[in-house]
Image 1 (tube, rainbow, N blue to C red):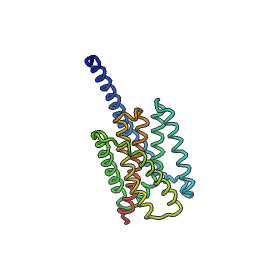
Image 2 (image 1 turned 135 degrees about the horizontal axis):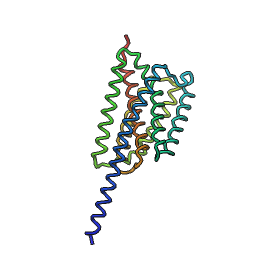
Image 3 (image 1 turned 180 degrees about the vertical axis):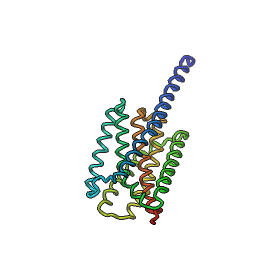
Image 4 (image 1 turned 120 degrees about the vertical axis):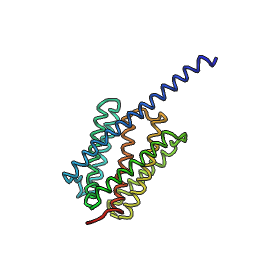
Length: 231
């Protein structure tokens, strides 16, 4: 009775594993590609001294969230086509523009370029570590979903509050918590692909991109606060 069933089961498992590996491979390739428009957007933003409604931080935050969720909606609707890839790359360019103000601020330090490279190296190390754990461990991290989401909500609320409070200490706490939360999110999101919980590489890339972006931005902010040197 077992003899005819075993080959079919093994074949189904091999096929499922093949799909997961293909999604993971495509995700990492698209993730690498998405860094190019991000760098381009950041470079253009620094050159143009780009400022997104800097005179009204609250209005700027609302506008940013509206644009970002517009991209999320468009990417989700077109995730099974080439249009989804183009929208994702357009979104990463926009995020590069939004990052340019922080990068421009850090570049005003005499060691600004070094701080940016340190933040890049630190982010790469976090990603490599979390991705390696996600792809090799047998432990299931899906249970982290609820508290990670709660952590993001707390970060957003604290960030909105600090628009009015302007407390440097609160900004430091926000950045520290954000680095921890989004580092854990890399582990969670990569494992979702590995375990077959996410089968669309465009959606997977968007999630992991946002994790990496937030780790880098908050790590750079912390380095600027604690390591920035004036001439």
